[in-house]
Every structure is written in structure tokens, then in C-alpha cells.
Length: 302
Image 1 (tube, one colour):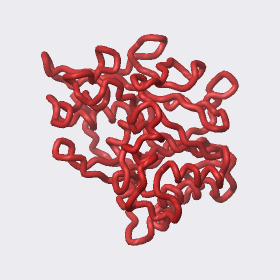
Image 2 (cartoon, one colour; image 1 turned 90 degrees about the horizontal axis):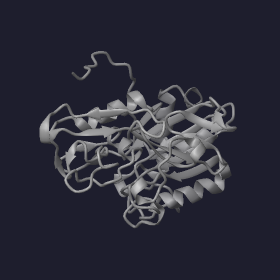
Image 3 (cartoon, helix red, strand yellow; image 1 turned 90 degrees about the vertical axis):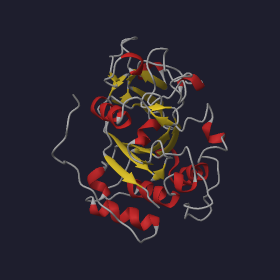
Image 4 (cartoon, helix red, strand yellow; image 1 turned 180 degrees about the vertical axis):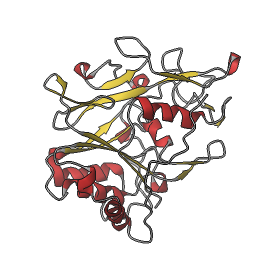
């Protein structure tokens, strides 16, 4: 039986009617200030959703203001900011015309001279050098490496109980032909400074986990995601952390390893509801409990 949460333990702030950068700065102020959220030497991973563009991706001026706020926090900042995303657009997503990395925004940019996420990365790299990185998480079936830990380099960890990795699985609670099971997957990546980051276990330095603080900011747009899914935002943004090897169709591919469905094929019948309702939220809940939950969630509903 699935757990029912009856007590709230989060705070929600809403800011509107200003420029996107002004809204973001006011939001951080309401949350206590960026210095309360980020330490001077932290690694901060910001995860937008860049599979789409325009209002389908977080506002570019807002994302710039968030990066600026971290880099220029009171008390100084010697850490790193990493813009990281898996938009599931092949081995070189920054070259894809079907993602917000390369596609020029016709709206929702609000930053002079910057009209795509590639241009945003260039702009921030010029300002902050190696303190700022962009990391593209790539699915294993698109050419990335399957790894068991940071000593093996960048890639994806599959929590299937092999290669010394613990099994972390979740099923839809049904029987027979409707039964499906998925496993948790997560990325390991390297910044422009050479810092290795294990999304689940933390920063890897000097041949081991250093304990250096790793912060995760989940920054999503607010999308209407068609009739089968409805409104999507912060929760579905975790599908851009997970490996979706096998594709979205559970009846054609859809498997990570021949046995386990991926995070998209598990809850849906491709572009239609799947055999058991609520499984998108349920699998993400398991991910939050076992892998990592965001330190801050921001919905850029511009």
C-alpha cells in the first residue's frame, strides 16, 4: 500500500508581475536569501527542462538571475554552478534543432542578445569561466557509458543489483500483462574544472567522496503536456535526470535493459495513460526517497 502523506513540510512562495529576473530575485529573498540556500564552496546543480523552447523551457533571463545570485552571494562564492540536463535528443543535444539548446526562442528569453540555451551558456561562461559549466546527460542507448561509480568516469548508473550497485526497483502493483517494473537510474558527470559529481552520492575528489556540499535546484517550466498527461512541471522534470533508453513506447522498446521499463514507458502507453494511474508521481517519489530530492524547486511559469 502506498504511503499517504498527511502533514506538509514545505514552504511555497509565489512572485508575479515583475520582469522574470526581478521575480526570481524576489523569490530568493522570500526564501531567506541565496546565502541561506548555498554555501561559499558548494557545487550547485541547476536542472532546467530544455527538451523544448519558448514557454516550454525556463525563462532565460530568470536562469541568468539565478546563476548571478549564486555567483555573487553575500560572503563570496568559490564553488561551481552546473547547468545540467538530459533532454533525450541524441548524443549531441546541443546541436539539435529540436531542443531549446540550439533552437532560437521567439519568446520567453527576455535577455538582450541571448535567444537559446547555447547562447546562455556562452554568455555565462564569458562571465564566470570555469566556475560555470554546462553538462549534457546522455542516455546509454544514445552512446553514453553505463557505469557503476565515479571511478569509471561519466555515464549512467542503473540500480538493477548488478556491477556492485544496489537494486532500487519500483513496480506498479498490478499483475499479469499489466505488471511493470522500473529501476532508478542517475548520472555521473564532470564539470569544466574537472570536478566529478555522482548525482546520488555526492562530489568525488581525490579518489573518494569528499563530503563537499552538493546542492540540487530543480527548475522547470509550466507546460500543458497533452491530454494523456495534462499539466507538467517540477515532477516530470525528473525524467530529464533519469536515463530513458529504449524510448517512450512500452510495446516497442521501452526497456532499459530488456527487463525494466524506463521512467517514461513505465507509467504510460506511449502517448496514452498506462495500466495503473498515478505511476509517474509514484516512480518520482521513489527517486526522491532513494536517490536525491531537490534542495529548491522553482517553477518558471513565464
